[in-house]
Amino acid sequence: MLMTGPGPMPRGPLVLGIETSCDETGIGIVRGRSRPGERHVLLSNTIASSMDEHARYGGVVPEVAARAHLEALQPAIERAVAEAGVTLAEVDAVAVTSGPGLAGALMVGVGAAKALAVSLDKPLYAVNHLVGHIAADILDADAPPLEYPTVALLVSGGHTSLLLVRDLTSDVELLGETVDDAAGEAFDKVARILGLPYPGGPEIDRAAVDGDPTAIRFPRGLSRASDRAAHRYDFSFSGLKTAVARWIEQREAAGEPVPVADVAASFREAVVDVLVGKALDACAQHGVPRLLLGGGVIANRRLRDVALARAEAAGVTVRIPPLSLCTDNGAMIAALAAELIGEGRAPSTLEFGADSTLPVTQIQVAARDAVAVGTA
Image (cartoon, rainbow, N blue to C red):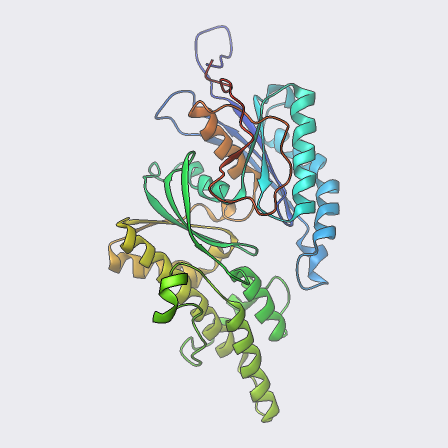
C-alpha cells in the first residue's frame, strides 16, 4: 500500500490519464482509493479542444487533430498538475488511451504516455477508450457505487455502442454498435445539409427548440422486425441522413421553403427513438434494470429526457455521469486505471501501440505478469 507522511495513514495511488483518441487533448488526475469501499477522487480534468480548427472543414480531420495534440499535450499536462496541486514527481502511475480512435491522434498520446512513464520511472496502464466512458461514472461523488451488471449506451461523434458491463475491469461485452455513421456523425452531416455550423449536435438542438418532432416521420434504422435477428442491438444512421437530404431536396425542387426547425426536431427524434429503444430492449432481454448513458452526445437534452421518461416506465434506473465527464477526457482514463490498480491488476508493458479498432472486450492492453502499483 502506498504511504505518505510520517504516520501510517495510507493514500491511494495518484494516476495521470492521457486521452487523445479524437479532437480533445484530455489530461486527468485522479487519486485512487486507498482501501476497498472508498471512492476515487477527481483532482483535475483538463481538456484542450481543437474543435475550432476542424470547424472550417465541417468535421474532424485526422492530421489536424494529431498536430493539435502535439501542440496541446505539454501545456495541458502542466495545467492539470497545477490544478490538482501536485507535481509530476508525485504521480504514481500513468494511464493512456490505446484505442479505439483515430490512429494518428492515438499515436501522439501513446508516445507521450510512454515517454512520461519511462522518464518518471512509473508504471503505465494502456486502456480502452470506450470502457473509459463507463469509468467516468465512478468519478461522480454524489452517485451511489456502480452496480453490476449494467447496460451501457455510449454515444459520441465517432462511436455508438451498446454494451453489457458485468465488471468494469474484467467483463465488458459488446451487444451492438453502429454499422455506418455514428450518431454524432449523423448530427454533423444533417446540420451541414441544413446549413447549420459545426459541430452539429448543439446546432440541431437549438434549431429543434421551435420544431415539431412529429412533423416528419424519418426512418428508424435497423428497427424493423426483419432486422432483429442479425442487428437487434446494432445502429445505422446513414440511411436517416440520406432520407433527410432527399426530403429537403424534394421541398426545394417544388419551390417550397424548408422548415428547418421541424426537420431538426424530427431528425433528432428519430435518432433518440432508436438509441433509447434499443438500449431498453437490451435491458429487458438481459434482465438488467440499470442503464448507463455516456459519450458526448448525451449532452443532448432530448436524449436524456426521453431516456429518463421511458426508462422509468420500464422500471429501469438511468445513470448519467456529470456532463463534463461525458465528452472525451483524461479523467475517465485515469479513473479506469485507478480501478485496475485497486483490483490489483499489473501495469502494461511498453509493447503496445495505438489500435484504432481496439475491441471493447480488451479493457487493458499488454498487461504484465506482476504485482500492480499500490498493492505491494
